[in-house]
Amino acid sequence: MGFLTTHVLDTAQGKPGSNMSVSLFRIANNQRQLLSQQITNSDGRCDGPLLQHEAFSVGIYELEFGVEDYFKQAGVVQPTPPFLTDVTLRFGIAQADEHYHVPLLVSPYSYSTYRGS
Image (cartoon, rainbow, N blue to C red; front, side, top):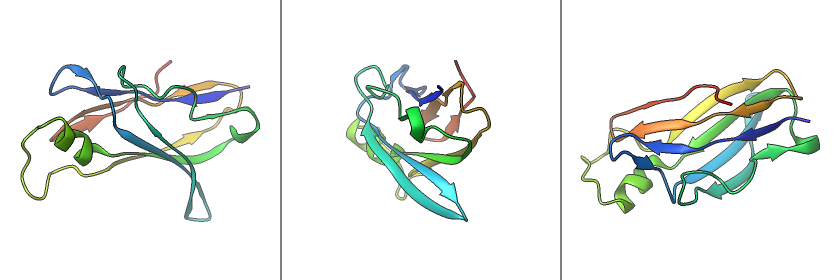
């Protein structure tokens, strides 16, 4: 049985993105259904899989990261409004028996992701 994990790396400060909100949505019929909300731990990771067991299925999902609040709490000076507020990553799960790891590498002015292991 597959599962979904994530982590956040703050590339501007060279450290894990701790205490960042992460929301997971399933997309069906162009509608977002909230599946979970978590806060990253001191290592920039959620304490467990975001999706697993019977809930882990083929489909389209979104991870939404609270980037603006994270950088504000970290004391990073940003313009008003900030360049990045929430970062939303939309991705597909095609194999329900695999591990999908979708990390966020972020700074106040850029972000990237990849399918990790």
